[in-house]
Image: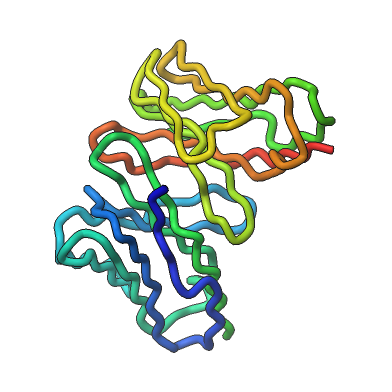
Length: 111
Length: 112
């Protein structure tokens, strides 16, 4: 069974702090996606990274794909209460339709 | 409005009583998938479909059935539900070339 280890599982920080969430696997992905989920709703796609070493920025969020396409990170700069939510990474294997999700990171940003 | 719809949103049932959760998308997506979400386990893929009449098992297919007779619909069938299938279920669709998932609002299922 392929695994995608996401860490940390819980993160509680103050407004203005920086944070990083990690996703790691021993398997190579054809692409990796990051989603954000709010209570009572389905996850919403934030970004997809495809190329090894790729870096994408979405306002204060920076996403990086590892050179070997086995790991990824999400860095949030100067977190705000509106960033609170569940962050999920998902790896796509060989474009065959199978997706593996990490366990999720529950982020709470306090004012 | 582009969307994935699921019905019902909430369902309480008893062990062994067959049920179907419907999923429909209006984006003409080839790919559709079902997931269950449980605390501490993230989202786990149950079944997916690359196109009409093409389905395949995800990581946790036991106890579930699916069919894809039309491009827009992908129902999830529990022939004989058991309490360990109590969970939050999500349907999703995407273009086949990106697999970027558009999720439905979820169905909270309780099996007693």
